[in-house]
Every structure is written in C-alpha cells, then in structure tokens.
Amino acid sequence: MRELVPLGESPQSRQRRGVALVVLGILLFVSSLVVGAALAPDVGAADDEETRRTLVGSQGGGPGLHEHGSVYLLDGRETVWRAGDTDSYFDVTMLDNGSVMAGFMDSGYDDCGPYESPCAHTGFRIIDPNADSDADPEIEYEYSFPVRSEKNSEVHDVELLDSGEFLVTDMDRERIFTVRGGEITWQWNASQRYDAPADPTRTDWLHINDVDVIGEDRYLVSVRNAHQLVVVERGAGVVEVINEGDGDSTRGDPTLLRQQHNPQWLGTGSVLVADSHNDRIVELERGPDGEWTVAWEIYAAEGVNFNWPRDADRLANGNTLITDSLNKRLVEVNRSGATVWSYNT
Image (tube, rainbow, N blue to C red):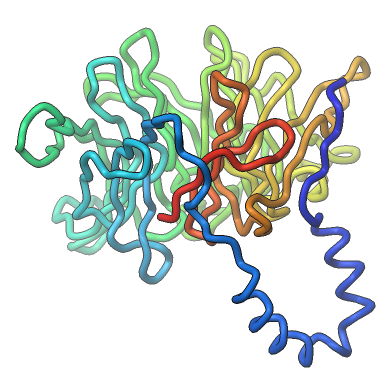
C-alpha cells in the first residue's frame, strides 16, 4: 500500500465546517472575496524550466459548454497550433503519424435521420495539424451520427485499436462500440447490466464518458452517473466493477467516486481517476480482499481547491497532469502535491 497523502480540503471536511458556520456564511462570503483576491496564487506562474508539450481538448464555453470548442498543442505555454470552429471537443489523442484523434459534437448538420434538420452530430475526427507548414489544421476523417440533443449525448472518448477498429463511447444510447470503415463491428449496451429507461436518448441516464483498453479485448468504462467503473470483456460483458455498491445495487458509493471522468488504468489493481463531483484526483488500489480503497488523493494545487476536475494522467516521470475544468487551468503535480507546472486556459 502506498502512503496516503491527503492534500487540500476534502468535501467531507468542508461539509462539516459548513454546518458549523452556516449562520455566518453570508457575512463571511463578502469578506472572503476580498481576502481571496489578495491571496489567490498567480495561476500559470509555476517554474517552467523544462519544456512540456501538452495536447489539449477544450469543450468550450457558452450554454452547456457547447461553444468555441478547440484542440490545441502547447509547447511550454506557447500555442503551436489550434483547430477550432466546432461546438465541442473532448478527449484527444496524438497518433503515431502526428495526426490527432478527438471526440467531438457540432451542430448545423442536414443529415439528421429521425430528427428535425438542422441537427447536431457527435462522433470522432482525425485532424491533421499541418504542423510542418503554414496551412491551418484540417479534418482528415470524420465518423459521426445525428443525436436528439446537443447536451449529454456526446461522444467523449475514442481509442484506436491494434485491429484498426475505433473504440467509441456513446452517451446518447449509453453503450461502447467498435467501428471500422464506417460499420459497427461490436457493441456493449449498458442495458445488459443497468435498468434502462424506455428511451435513453431522452434523458441523461448513465453518461458513459470514457473507455480505455486495458488488455486484449478488455476495456475500462466510466459509467459516470452510477459512480462506477466497469471492466467489459469483449464477448463476456462486465467482468469487474470498481465501486460496486451494497447488495444488488448498480450504483456505487459516492464518497469513493462521484460522477467521475477519464480513469487511467495504471496496471493490475490500480487506477487513477478524476473524481469530479468530489473535487479531487484519486488513485484507487485493489486490496487482497478485492475491495478498492484510496491509495493517494489530492484536492488542491497552488493553494486553490479543484473545481470539477475532468482528467488526470500519470506521466512517465511519475507526476500527475490534471485538467481542473471550472478553474480553467492545467496543473502538473508531483507525488507530494507540489505544482511543477501550470497553465491558465
């Protein structure tokens, strides 16, 4: 078991403190704004002696965070290139040839299937950044399909498999599937484990937002609204559940994970998760009894508590790169929690 390093203030401690000070809250709020402005760190001013190249997918702003989405590459804090003009981009991956694969959602399509035109499409794109020329980035390939709503229906993640298939999350129909040459070759529907509503496209039911390859035909899936991670084996279905919950429940313990994003499998028995609604990054470890417990967690960086963090990547140097969404920053921290680099988006 690695040493537990709690950093920042946990939601539980904030809740206990809030009960004690609820009467004073309104008075303290005004003064805290003044003090906070004076003491807030200069986000993005951490030491940057080492050059870092960071690929960023930005969902965007506007209503529902669906406006001005972009993908861009940072060299240190300088933008090398940017691809925009899309409502939203999500998880991004740089391929071996330098192209970028990204989940996206965009509106204004005429091909709308059963829905009224114009409509929104979601899916994934392969983007050529044209990094070696003065040309703007361009879309090389797109796989997309129409959705009923722009919100809570998007493809948040896509992975390229060794087979040449693309592995895709589908929040609209709550499934993961593989596609090759525009044709679906396999799928797992969440209704095989979870009790489905009559029409998943009409409600934000499970919000499946991430999938990663963790072995041959084994995929780690983030089922956000159930507060669970499940391991899906191709041909067998769910073979393991992280944060299984009590009894026959298909909802996990929200104190362990709550509306998480982008888990990263660190090897057998360890996973790093952006525990979004608990405002922390947590590393979970499977014990000898099969129970998953906290091995490492962090709630803050640069003196600022995280606010809806939505990605965490363990880097080759052992540091953790964090997307702190609502604080509009990227931060890299070491194992002790010290910030070694940050960027204000």
